[in-house]
Image (tube, rainbow, N blue to C red; front, side):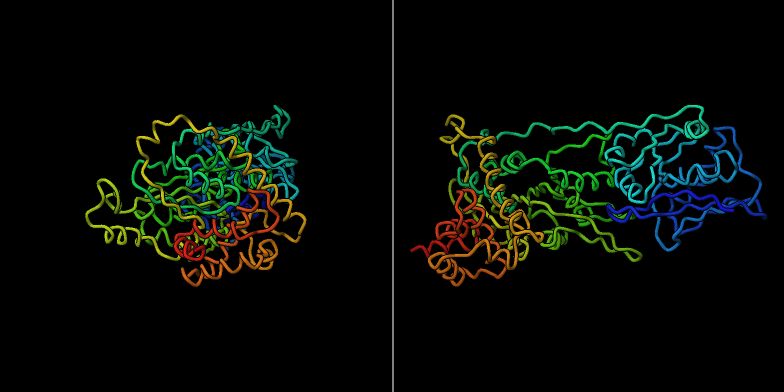
Length: 511
């Protein structure tokens, strides 16, 4: 009769059930692993064998077959060590035969029998609870797994500790959830001198969840403003905290089980590949867009990223998720993030006007900015020109308003859109940047002057259908910041100015 222990395999942030079955048969003395395991899984045999020797145990002189079922599901990672070892111990009689029926297990073994921490403890614990099981995990993963709520957690430092626990020699205490951190101090918007138009645009982006880009010479404050966006955003809701933490757990980024309600802020270098941005590799790990889920993705020096990497952002910007396709699997990760991009006007950074202007303008500017495709720029709601900061700006005293005041207005605007969505029911999105279809038409019903302005601007500036939709979303957010119930002409006019293709058209339409 085969001994059986439940574990999990990860497909994105989803943990799927895997049954580890171990049977001893007659025949050549061997330890065989079957079930479509990867390289790390195949190496489990040697780690299990060495861990047993560290405990003073030796494998029986029989043919040991360990099957990871279902056999057609690819399995990667070292967390299969512990369930394989426990199934072998149950088959040998070291553990009582039925004691593992109420538990799932995951963990890597060291050669002396200690259980080493692994990634994915939180989604594994949630999946175990969904199956009506507890979870046996490494002691280092206990605080993280304990966030799963009602799931029983057994966090063990070693194999011998598990044996002693189930034989009644030394009962292991249930771990406590890790600490909830408030997050690091966020830089204050008051530290940015000048750039009032850019600050206004940043506040609008925070209120509605809109994507934003800054174009300006070096030293104009583009990166400073991007780094201050997380401070304008409200803390993660409990649902968002769970979603974000599961992605970070699979990526192995949760240290000591500590979670934080601060929104993620990811700023990859411009040398990042497409796989680094959207996810990939042998194990299809989450990329920067998923690690920024429910937070901010900042791409500095936007044209310096490869064209392939930038164009791979189109799908997640529209759908809020990314699909990593492999020959034997398709892995889906959540990726609803707020994009903040920054770029110089041209390669030399000086642009085509003012002191020290580029001698090759406007051709240099056009060549440089065309490295970012039009379809990607069309998905960025606010496209802001950031002028150089003058000595007069730097000599001014700090602004009267900073992050706290702007964040209060953002929270009020988000509360309006959230209440509106809750009243509509049927899964209406709480953020204006996600509104679409009939819901967008309902919340952005324009009066005649506003619709006339938008139509004239579209004809003059060539707004795409996507640009029309995003302008409506932007106008709705501007109205929410003012506490206005209806979207009026003045809101549409401001929204058009923030879209590069619509700005000249808006000016012409306004006369």
